[in-house]
Length: 422
Image (cartoon, rainbow, N blue to C red):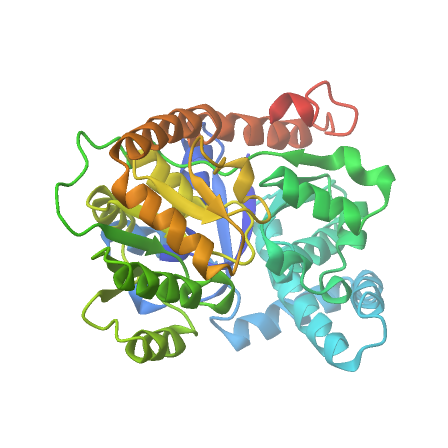
């Protein structure tokens, strides 16, 4: 029996943790039916593996004709049920006209998803991220349970601040009441979900931390030997990642006599602003923009780094930090959101207050000049990633939840509690 995964994009270079999770589930003989809202960008489909992922994925926005036929067929066959679910969707918008329009669109995609799930005998849907994918999975499950004699359940994984940016849009309160379980990628994420939901549903929240394939990010045999330390940052180029703070910290390092270089890996809407700041600070000869790289290329870049830096203002539990720690690159980051659960100051990393240029520059200099500190941080970090973020081990916890639902045991009241699967 397979389950459906609902996502915004698939495959996507920036979301390799999802493809890794799908691969882990299928290695454990739980087939996954990928359903994505958007077609992938060309840059995300450059390998044979990515082409294979694309070929097996259903894309909800790929054909307006198919969308219309699916909706018409479902309404024609089950008019009362479909009207009931449409009303649920509209009511969740709280009379906000723009949101009502979005919810109607979500309902249409949910109808297409439900029809596809019926054709493939899907009994459980799982969404990644608490906004649109979770809304579509929720409404699709409502449709399936009103149009079929078989029970269908759903769940979702909640990640970072994007899922909590607007409670009125996300309606996590309604989703928590409907979902069989919710996976939280960090204790911080769980706390934010508790903040906006009824306590009677908190026993459905399970902390299963993101994991990586440790074989793909092996511990390097030796750090690079160079006079000018290379700082690497891997993140989406968006305001909350703190790239402007990093550039200003680099300027301070150079002015203090530390001849460091910076490699920025990633793409996003803030790239022009970051490049402008680099030029403004006179850093163009010190900063390299590498764009979005494939995971293997990211691993090579990290293995050649002296320091990894992620100066974010908000995060869930950043996979890029896990990857750097796994390879043995000393990490400098910020003590916000879920980061301290992974990057423990003076143990597995150095962490500083977000947006504090002086503190970031001081931490980067400390790592750059102290070889014993770099060695200790790298050793402790690798141990922590092996202990808490091995995708092979963490996927077992997720598999248990899926099997509990598929076997109609139910997660609520299961002896496999939140605390026991952390």
